Image (cartoon, rainbow, N blue to C red; front, side, top):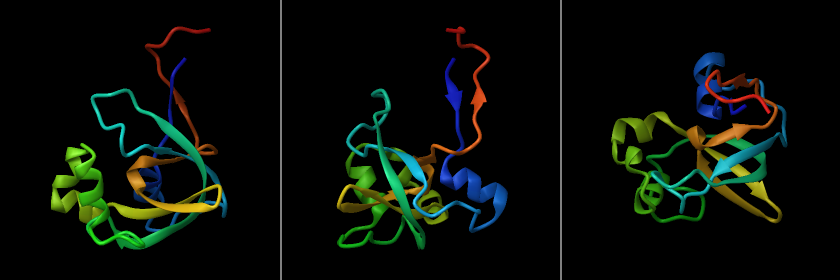
Length: 122
């Protein structure tokens, strides 16, 4: 069956601004170049930090906002300034690289999951 897992942003909405997430937690992240309606492509990494900066601000090493970067790759939701200001940036390590992601596009592997009722059992 398919499972649903809360994003870091959803966990923060329930637990407050800084949920109790273990350092170096294993995470899945959405790949910016694979915007809807394409099937979601995920990449695995480890959580470095949940930043205080929102997606409306520049990402580390960038000259544009993280929201603008994702919009340029087809993620229209970040065109909404209010949405971009509400979503924090999350730093994730992939090997030797550390990249910034919107918190609503990062999911902890250890987060509680719900099984979808409409999926067949295997």
